[in-house]
Image 1 (tube, one colour):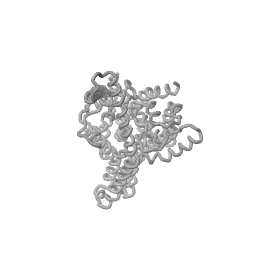
Image 2 (tube, one colour):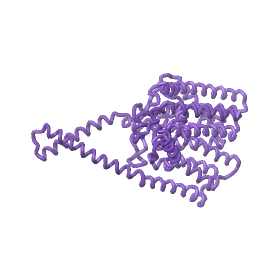
Image 3 (spheres, one colour):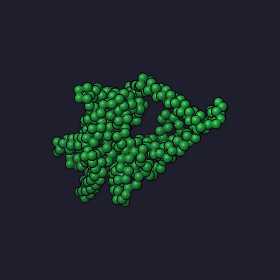
Image 4 (cartoon, helix red, strand yellow):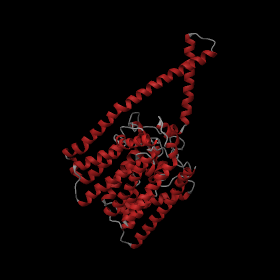
Length: 470
């Protein structure tokens, strides 16, 4: 059975990444001076970022340094491997290298979840495998397996955190300072907010010992300062010089723009006194700015953006105006589990409405059924340390996304950070000693897995395979 799990995990991860690589390989093998333009014009999958492709093609700090302080450095060795291959073959192999890394990450996520369910929650191997298949059939787990954004590796790291810390809890061992610091640095280095989940898991494990001054200093404060220092160093060394160069370019572009308006005005003006010329130019610029504002206000990246709590670097990411109910129905419990058949893989900042409805009532019925199944499972597993840890992680995500509104208009993109909570929540139902209850749960989970696998594979398969053939 364990060999079967490894084989299925490998086939699943490799297949999706191979299809993704084949889809774009002829375009992406091009060696160019502007990889950002090459990738962003061709690759549009739900608004996921493509900084990893660009970074591996030519190493640079492209990620938001405060949200992903160590991610650029993690891509340095893959980038150097790609440079060697470019020199050897004349082709860019970034998409292939990233595909291999993401396939390995997805394989590890599958195996980690199986070990959590079988090794820690004591499910039968076949039941643990079934829940792994349920997890793998979810729409945005499929996407996280191959899209070149950080969510796939983040998902794997969070599962590793749950596995390691809960194994410590079950065996009665306490997480050491070094173990916490290492998990915190790696996980927060990829996505800073996920570092909070490491500390939450450590708090559950150590309880009162978490607040020991030495532990707080070495396991929490020191890694935090290190991450922020690295982020600030990247900001000063890489981000600011590029921003300044871009600012100078915009200044020069503005000068050319004003000079062109001046020429156009002088060609038609009858009054060419300096005062009249300046007034006429200002009127033209003002009218064009108003027209651009009206056009931009109707575009998705503006129309779908909610109102933040206040302006600022971090507080500006919040959203207090987007409908929470529609978000829960369509973008939290809907799209991450079952792709919407309308606006499939659309980008909310490009060509997708903030909310897309399903074409059929039964999609909503399935959504409610799976959420009810998870809720019942949480109740029966409320004393289980794995369930408690997973629910703590989920609560943190709901705090930042639903309450504060961070990324709420694209919450489905963030779903790989918490989708694994669903099979963990359902798992206690498969531990029932009541034969009828167990069989009912088994049948329900099997049906849910088959439905999502069929629905999502049909839509995603057409998207990938048709692109390969075309």
